[in-house]
Length: 259
Image 1 (cartoon, one colour):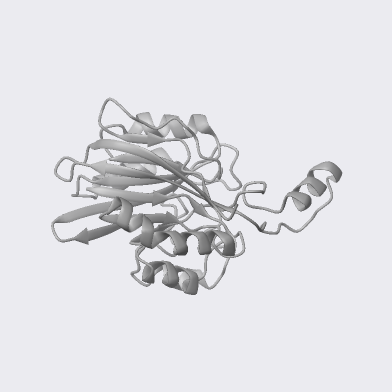
Image 2: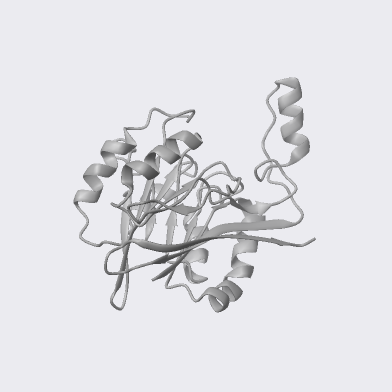
């Protein structure tokens, strides 16, 4: 089983980069499933139903979210529509949406999970470790991929070891900077601290450099704006054993366009 997972899509430039690249990525890698993190897809914060639908129509099989999952109020009902879009499972009980979805193509089955870390994050999320323990007990498919949306590398690495042998892959998102620590852990779980982003390359994690520098050097509030110019497309290609769920390969993907 081959799974292509693209990192955080940032604003219109990121969406355009993904939609433009998907046909060639499908031809080059022939993935069975395509996953994306879409939590920054709407002008850098959140996602809308229209954007989600455009991604699904282009061939994306599932969308994961993160701490900006509910930045756009119109997404709440959509998360309960049955579409393969998941918000972090460790949001409080009663929050719209779900933390896992099941994808099926022929005999292939893949569970896609989403959770938020707590270290240096903006909200007091429920314990992701115990939350995922409970969620995994409810799954009967061996192929399972977790998008762990977290800030601290240490927390991501800890989650990789915690779930080693219980999921096919633990892939980090949120920092928008792709790491170079891909590996397969002893129990058969593929790990990467951060997939990176799909968005403007000449930016500060997708945002306009001038705006960010003004905010950092003056400490005055300035509205974040998505940058323009060349784009970067980041992610990873996984190869999984569909019978056992173990990872047999992980390869980072990093493409630049528009230069």
